[in-house]
Length: 451
Image (cartoon, rainbow, N blue to C red; front, top):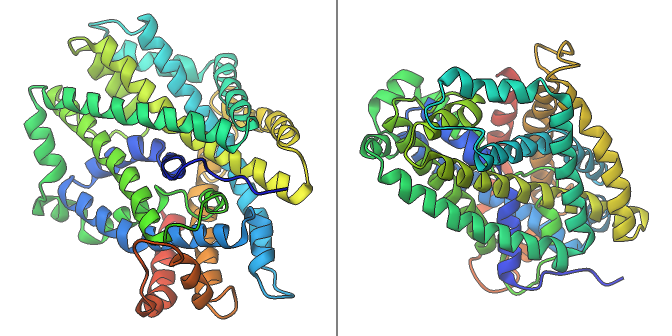
């Protein structure tokens, strides 16, 4: 069977960026930036994205494009006889499942809040306690949460069942273009609020006080973490799109474009959130509660808040659902390649499987709230396994496979990365790729385990 391919380069870029753009950009980034005092964190984040994120992204894309296969078979095609690199492909599949087991629940929360603002459940002048109570009521309702979660799972597999071009690419292009329009509209509105100037100064102007308060070491490690995890590297979520892309363009340039789109959304999310928070005297370092408790409280006290809240959570749905679609496509593709299933069969079986596997996360907030491992609930356990183990370890495996003589090898990786027109990688980067990058990834892994 001929390998599917993207209809256009724009389709590839928007779908790939959509995979990277998720709640990490519009939820975690502003929170971490706020915690670290803005300015210098944003600067170090951009540097880390360039020196760490872009190189590893080119490696996933190179493995995909050179093999024209999904995770497991891509390793099998490129590894030397007798090698076992393909075992990591199974961990990639497990990582995609694990990510979707809680990401679909969080996306369901976005859908629920969009509905609350759209229907007027959040009203002007609500007390902070009443606003916070909406989230508490949602978490304590397993039936309601399960409905939203299963709707996300169903819609995701329905879209992917129509194929790469007619399903994933077509819907992702619409969502991503709408997302970019919404985020521009929301950012412009935030910049007109009375406290916008102070919010943007905190956000973008470097301040020595932030280094004094947080420590330069913690700030840099947080920036490395955010830059690295924002791209969803290490579980073949990006590799699959390499297997669909053309050979017309060199991978470094495509990786930079994907990172640029991803970063634009993260920076614009901060432009929405920081002015709004400063205008209403709220600090944007509230962690998990920032999106579902703090910001709704800002919206209900804002003129036209119902409209802006509705648009904000529509934007959040697009950001999170684009990642859901991309990861589900990876799961379906692995099953098609490895087991020889048709796309419809792979979508049906995996849809039923994930419909069941998503329920523990839903129940972890109510019926199974007593289930704890290391002080973590179900969602936190699943997120820890993906973010702190599978992503950094997986990225390290891709890196070692591409740049060492025991894997695919640096020369073959470089030839594939530089195939086509555009920005090329220099052979002089070999020592950096072989010795410095592995240490940086190990630092993230150790910090994540200790943190």
